[in-house]
Structure formats: C-alpha cells, structure tokens
Image (cartoon, rainbow, N blue to C red; front, top):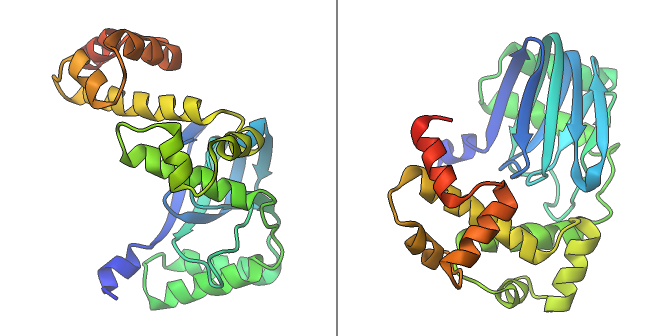
Length: 252
C-alpha cells in the first residue's frame, strides 16, 4: 500500500476554542473519531433529536458518517481529536456515538499521543492500543444495519444527479417499501426528503459557483420543470434559486 495514502487515513489533532464554537457535521465525517475533552464543555445534537453533553475529562467516540452538530463552550475549550479510517478488528462491527469516561490506561495512551501528534508508526500504534481498549466498553449501534443502508442510499444520491427512489432501493438491495420503512425507523425522514436535500445541496453549489442558468440546473438535476425545482429549493432553504445566487455574489 502507498504510505502516503495509508497515513492520510489518520488525523491526530488538538483543537482550542475560546468562548462558544459551533461545528456542523450533519453531512457526516469521512473518518471515525475518538476525542478527549481536556477542558471546557460540549453539547452534541445527535441523530433522532437527542442531545448529549460532555465535560472536562470525558471522551467521545463518533463513528464515520454519523450526522450531528456540536457546540463547544468554555475559556478555553481544549479537545484532543484522533481520526482513523479502519477499526482494529472486523469492519462490519458498527459502534454507536458514545460519551464515556476513560480509565487510567486509556488516559496514559492519550497523553503519549498528545506529546507527538505526528502521524507515524509509533503514534498509530498507540492509537490502535487505545482503540482496542475502548471498543470493549462502548456499545454497538442497535440500528447499524439500517444506518448502513441509509448511508449507502445517501452515497448513491450524492453520486447521481437524476434518479428515482426505486433506483436507490435497487442499489441498496431492498424494496421501495422496505427503504421507506428503514428511513422512517432510523432517519426520521423519507427517502424523497433526503433526495430533495441532497439535490438542493448540489443546486446551491452550482448556483453559487457557476453562471449556469437556473433552468439548465433544474434539468441537470432531473427536475421535471423549473417551477417544481424552484418550489423544492424554497421548501428546503426558505430562499429562491435567484436569491441564493444573488446572496453569494454580494457576500451575504
């Protein structure tokens, strides 16, 4: 394996914030993360409308692709953040978002990584020792199979511009009715609503970074008419396509 590619699978960082800091991760991270709150406090708005809190001395595990928002407050907030692509055991185990209190062995490993966050064989080895320790105490997601299907559906929707829900269901190897049931149980929205959100994300990028006419964007993204496109954009964002484009140009 290419060493550069391998080392890109890891992120070893420390973040410092003063007062209030907000982070929007509703699109989901590309890596799994383990973090340790050295000082300050954090609030996480996680899936299914739940809110959880972390304080100084708490650790957090965030699985790859998990959608959440975080609010950090304190003076200062200091947070160790370790991202990784692959689990130290079988990848088909899916863990849930969780806040926990690390034991002395885990704290010692965190302190060793903290001394030198350079991504190298030594720090990666320490990280996997840490992961091997904490995965024996954190819980497996009860809906991990459903989450995997939802993530796979979202991946397909982001890759394709024009598609039907039946295309998504076929890609995920489930029936259309099964796909709707999975979304209702685990995501709290329908596949159509997720489709609209993702298409509007794509539309917003085209509106703010190109001069492609609105009608052409509508056709490119598979909307039947430009009027329907405008309606969906407004339903999702509260703005018309023209307003989104104008706001980007004047820096609002």
